[in-house]
Amino acid sequence: MQSKGTLLVTGGAGYIGSHTVKHLLANHERIVVLDNLVFGHREALPLDRMTFIQGDMSDAPLIEKLFTEHQPEAVLHFAAFAFVGESVENPLKYYRNNFAAPLTVLEAMQKHGTKRFIFSSTCATYGNPVSIPMDETHPQEPVNPYGESKFMLERVLKDCDRAFGLKSVFLRYFNASGCDLEGEIGEDHAPESHLIPRILMAATGEIESLTVFGTDYPTPDGTCIRDYIHVQDLAKAHALALDYLRNGGESTAVNLGTGRGFSVKEIIATAEAVTGKTIPVSYGPRRAGDPPELVANPAKAKALLGWEAELKEPRQHIESAWKWMTGPRKGRYSC
Ligand SMILES: NC(=O)c1ccc[n+]([C@@H]2O[C@H](COP(=O)([O-])OP(=O)(O)OC[C@H]3O[C@@H](n4cnc5c(N)ncnc54)[C@H](O)[C@@H]3O)[C@@H](O)[C@H]2O)c1
Image 1 (cartoon, rainbow, N blue to C red):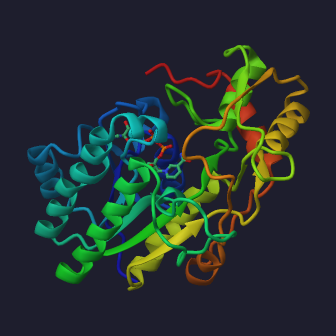
Image 2: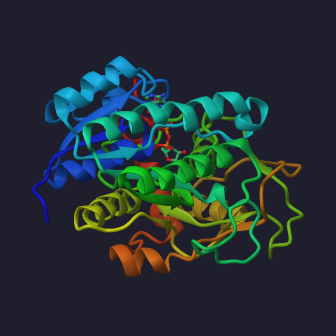
């Protein structure tokens, strides 16, 4: 194993990035976060223990300066836009930020000889499931520009490996959820589109009611089934993927999920049990592009990285998110 160098974390002030930074700092890693704060939060980072650079990953002079000064050993790439519906309305915004902008970082990596890249990819690269659970060999036919933009970057990364030996791990997350178990940091998206925070916003009265999109899916209770993966488990997977590359691992794709699916109604019922509140719910039509069921086969992550989800129960996810929502910050950063 080589000695540890500096890690560049793009989008590290966001939800999953900030939880991963916390975990990496606990592992004594040296970290530089680059985030333009379009969605991220300065307060999500321990600024006294790392370097924070506010800027855009497409800013070539800034990226060149960053690579010259910090010579990162590896890049963990979280920065992206991630609203599926918006990507359908405004695809170019997504291709610009999720596909084109990272090329500036990859060019700097090529120039400066940085050979390790950990990519926040997504189960949205698979599109509609042809088999459940989905493993990494499942066909990749994205059904929206968000998934397509991530799939395109995966293909670029494969070419970079062939051309100049850039080794990447594509971590295909299923539905990220939950918050730091210590309640220090959490999920604060604006607008918030994820199910669990929206349920909890309905519980606190921050929104009038939770809209459930579709009750006529071919699932036992008619609502969509998803595989919820706790953000702390995601953070650990990044550290293990980094170890894998540091130990000479080849480029590869790895699903990050629990292997178990839960319906929207099951998640609501669990949230009612955790919060002791009745969640006001309204029912709407199906949303375009929402498959009935998305569940990972996470066997490869265990075999290759030694990773397995530890916080598998939706109750654990909701309890940690509720702790954040009802804690000192009431689920919101101030900047
Ligand atoms: N949340 C999920 O369930 C989920 C599932 C699958 C994949 N992902 C992927 O994981 C990553 C992180 O997701 P998240 O939920 O933490 O999102 P997030 O919006 O909280 O974090 C993304 C961060 O990237 C920053 N950013 C965006 N564009 C930038 C740019 N051009 N330059 C610099 N910084 C930029 C934002 O300010 C934000 O802090 C994304 O790539 C997302 O596509 C998320």
